[in-house]
Image 1 (cartoon, rainbow, N blue to C red):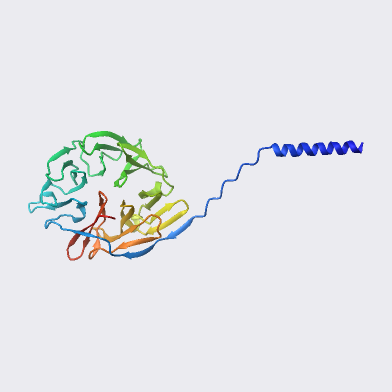
Image 2 (cartoon, helix red, strand yellow):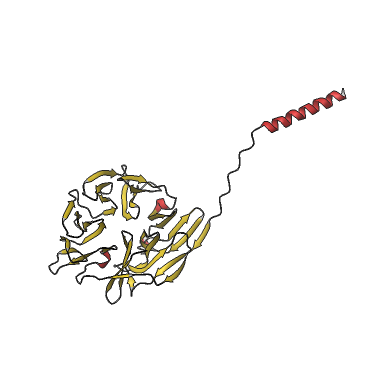
Length: 340
C-alpha cells in the first residue's frame, strides 16, 4: 500500500512539473526607462567665422529686414517723399509701396509683402517684373517656405498659395472653437499652432509638400510652448513669457531628445535652424530687440556666443541656407555667413 502511495506521489510530481514546463512563461517586464539627464549649457565665445560684410544702401529703412543669399541681396529703403522701395544689390527697384516692405527669395523670384496693407506679390529678382499677385484678403500675417506662401485669413483659417503664381491651392481651417497663431517660416516648412481656451494642450502643424497641412507629434512641453523647433531628432521649446511681470520674450529655451534635457538659454527670440545648427537672439532688449547672436549644435552642451562686428545684434535671418545679421555699432552693418 505504501508503495502505491509513493508511486502516486511521484506521478503527481511529474504532472506538476509537466504543467509548469508547458505553462506560458510570464511576460517580460517593461524595461526601466533611463533616468532623465538634465543639463545646463555653458556659454562660450566664438570668433573666426568667415563673416562677409554686405554694403547697405544709404536710405535703408530696416536693415534687419534685408534678405541675403550667396548671389543676391534685397534691401527695404525709404525715399524722401515717404515712398517705400525694395531694391536689389545692383540698385534695381523691385517693388514700391506706401507701407514698409519685407521680402524673401524664392529661386529667381522675390516674394514681397507690404507689411501693413497685407499686399503680397512676386517679382523677378533681377528686373522687378511682376510675376504674380495675391488678390485675396489683405493680412499682416504671411509665412513663406520653398514653393509655398501661407496667408492667415483670420484667426481660424489659412490660405495656402503656390509661390510661383500666388494662386490659392487650398484652404486650411481649424475646428470650431480653435484659433490659429504663431505662423512662422521654418527651414523645413511653414509652421503654426492651433489652440482653444478650454484645452490644456495645443496642436502644432506644418505644411509639407505638396501643400499638405500635417499635425506634428510633439512632447508634453511643446503643446504648451510659444516656440517649437525640431532638428536632428531634437525638440526645442520655449514657454510663453509671464507678461504680467514684464517679461516680453519666450523662455527658457530647452532642447530635449530621449532622456536628455538641455537648458540652452533663459530667454530667446527668433529661434530658427540654419545650416544644421540652431540660431537665435539671446538677451533681447529694447523696442528694437537687439541682443547677442548665439547658436547651438544639436547634442552639444555648449552655446556659442558669436563675435561679429561691433555692438549688439539684430534677430538673425536664414535665406537659402545663408545666415544674416545686422550689428549696431556707430552705424548698422549687415553681415552674411555663407556656411552657417
